[in-house]
Amino acid sequence: MRTEVVEGCASRRQALGRTFHVANLALTHRSHLSRRAWDELAHAGCFCSQPYGSVEFQDARQRLDFKGWIPWQEITNVLCLAAGGGQQSALFASLGYRVTVVDISPAQLRVDQSVAQGNGFEIQCVEGDMLGIDRLFGRHFDLVYQPISAHYAHDVRQMYRGIYRVVRPGGYYWVEHWSPFQMQLASIGRWESQAYHLVEPQGRGVPLPWLVTHEPSSYLPSIGWHHVHTLSDLIGGLCKAGFRVLRFAEREQSNIAAAPGSEAHLAAYIPPFFAVFGQKPGDNGKIACGAQE
Image (cartoon, rainbow, N blue to C red; front, side, top):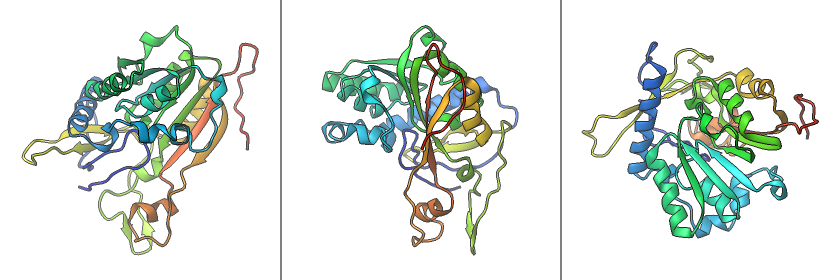
């Protein structure tokens, strides 16, 4: 088992470790287990459940958009997808935007409700899976904003199709992903001698389990699931859904001089996170996949 903290995203984890493979666990049961795991993390006050406040509001745009891609003047209403925990929703609300946040965890959403009440924000909280946002069909958001979370979804292409339906024509989708290559690393002894070892396959098959430990340590851990998606799904699937890819970037947080096996050293070999910024074509626009510098 390994303990790790994933930096820079709404899906940061505390005390997580891979232990075994389960081939035939029902998808609905996996969803239930993920909800329970995130409820436990919220109750434990993990980093991703610490609500933002006046300090973070001072540089809200930079925190939300580290590359400066979002055309803020075109945004009025925002959907924060799989983003409970009182962070992204609060940042957008502090900037004056109308915010809806969707999350599978009721405990995470209670943090959003609390930060909204404490700051006089209007944040609509919707409990739901990122693969099941049907109740939002018919609404049209200027921006769907999704921090790192897609690895909890068993079918990212299905997720993209749902998101496409709730973005207005000409609207935008900002998403950040955990690199599938980092997810393929060995749980124990990932660095040996002069190399990092990838041992897990990519694809839509068996997910990787992770454990959320609790205090006191005598409690049984909750189990969640990670899916190692291919780049064909994570990027190609975005185009297939109809979005035009406008921007792509990896987070720059590496240090080749750091201790081998550390997160900073690993990032020099395999950057941990990458963000993609897409646009739904306007009513008269063509559906094509393009890129801009």
